[in-house]
Length: 260
Image (tube, rainbow, N blue to C red; front, side):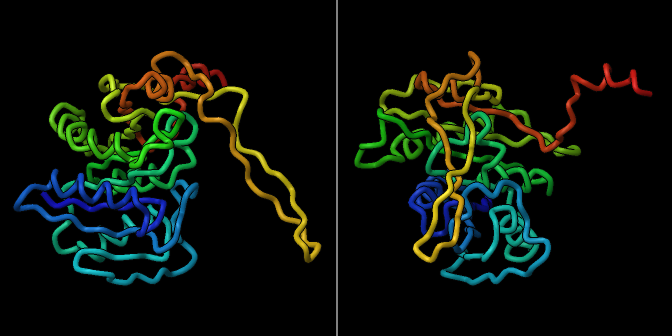
């Protein structure tokens, strides 16, 4: 198997090294793992592409490239330049430092990379490591993803739904904020929504007198609806969420016919 990996934390991020190990084991003895990742951190850029400017790409080592662009840019670079003569069988994105469950998935560059791969017709999975009191002080904060990443992907490749139609399915995996030994299993889960929270801004004035705004987040242990991704993560389960890039609110279409 030929696998392309990327992330949004940057090419030197420890989570990418974790993913490289998982991908190497998944690819097998005769497989290949290629890396095209952002030269600098690109957290929170979502599905952004550098449509109005070029990006520099540099080969750091055999099958390892850094691109001055977003995670989605890296997927485009991997598919249409770096691996254009022999495309990958699978694109993996992550392992993100921090969860991409619930509304975080909308902002995530990690998820954005998997989305772009799916739009290009390539099977794709985003992987993220939830953080909390149960794992943030471990010697290896990626322990859960490192131990459970390979068997989770193997099971998903074997039992998952894979389509190559318009807006094909891709997957968002979140590993729970617990030590690897305390993981209770895997749950197929819908995307949740944390109420009474969200991103905001906090103003600061620099010594020069210029005014800046810092984007602020919110606690990640807020409850979501039962059975949703963040809910099962906080219970100690790995969440696997099928996604599509189709933004249509299908449940509202029938009612909207009243305007016709």
